[in-house]
Length: 117
Image (tube, rainbow, N blue to C red; front, side, top):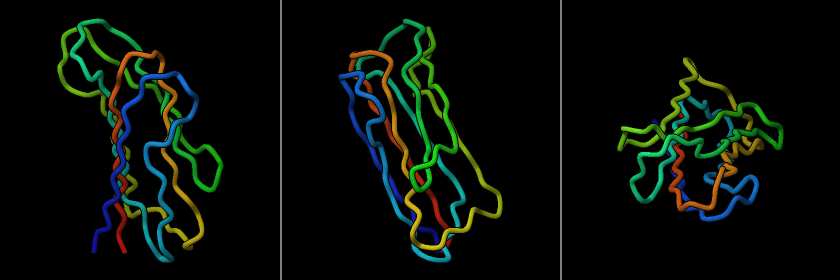
């Protein structure tokens, strides 16, 4: 059975490492997929780095990437990380998705984690 976790925040400051989603999967859970999206809350044609996203497990950074706004796109910047057969967890490791926005312009950030139990 799938266990889907979702988190979202709207940012208006460049405060470092703001939490989008923090979840501790149960024992024998397998992380199958992470999806992260970022976009301006008001449409913009300006190409710009929206911010840096971090994925940490038990306080240790595992992934870091930037999300970009393009000059002709009304869709969110999107990163999809599939993990094949899944990453096994023991029940004590927290999976944290954080963002450091690149500007004070209002942005919406969402994150989804999909587990198989």
